[in-house]
Image (cartoon, rainbow, N blue to C red; front, side, top):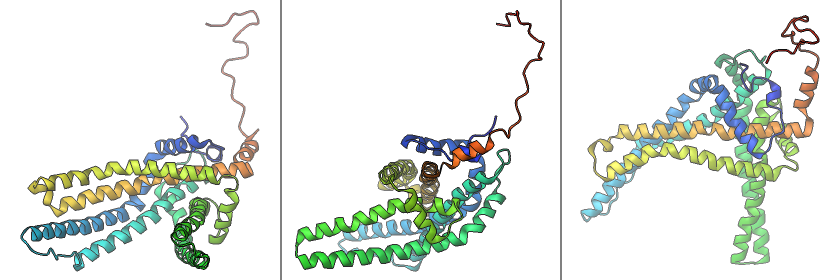
Amino acid sequence: MQQRYAQATDFWKERDFGDKISAAFEFLGAHWRPLGRCLVYFVLPATMLFGIGLGIFTTRLMAYSGLNSAARRMGGYGSYSPTDAFSFVGLGLAMLGALVAVVMLSATVYGYLRTRLYLPPGQAVTPQLVWRAIRARLGWVLLAVVVLGIGSFIGTFMLMGIIGMGLAAIGLGVWGSLLSVVLVMAPIAYVAVVLSLYFPVLWLESQGIFASIGRCFQLIKGQWWATFGLVVVVAFLQGALGFMFLIPQYAVLFGKALHVPFFDSEILGIITQCIYALGIVFTYSVPMLVLAFQYFNLVEQHEAVGSLLLLSQLGQEPAPAPALAADHYRPHDEGEY
């Protein structure tokens, strides 16, 4: 049986709201083995670094919280603070691991999609081919992350300053503060939804950093609300999936509340944070794939790429051989039942 989502025409299609979400899960079901292998190679190391750093920091934080509670019960001030070097190392590892894990997850998911799009349907996607795609575009992606981060900070700061000065000149008081929040958040939300297509465009098209931004605004014309609703739904979906990986942490907290000795282990705390990090990072591939299928949907609406591909394939496939010989039946035969 031919694998689903193995050729370009399987991707470039117009899809309804629910079809984009179901397409993401169908793609995962069809490609979980080769895609999972790529995720293990390229994303797992940074994810484990994220989990270990988070485990070190949170276990220290909880330990100091316990010391403060004990000190207050004894009449002290509870002045213990998790400011030791080991806690800062854990926090630094967690932040670095989270950043690298998200970047590599985006690179792996979209690099896999890009590789699948340009391979013949019968050829398997391997980690070597995906790494070739990642290596070719990773520098652009890292630069894009820096540009978007700096641009978001400067743009938000300038917007807040301009709106704040304008409302202060009007003198609306408390209502002015509420209005300023709305006026600041509305354009930020609009741009954020538009740029949710940024990394699919950057990976799946050979566009530059700033050209990809313009491409996002071009594709989302007339489809902003649909994309906004899709982003909200998949965010809740990813949150629900990620919540399952919080259960081990709650089990450990419950065990500590009952003073079960085994649950005081720092190693156990680090393990539960690694499970949480794995769940959060790997389930984030679902929103990435949903946004990729929204990108395919918008491109098909604007440019009919999939329809043109289907038209170009007409007449290229050989005609199927007849199942029966020409003289198998006579004109008056009734055939088989």
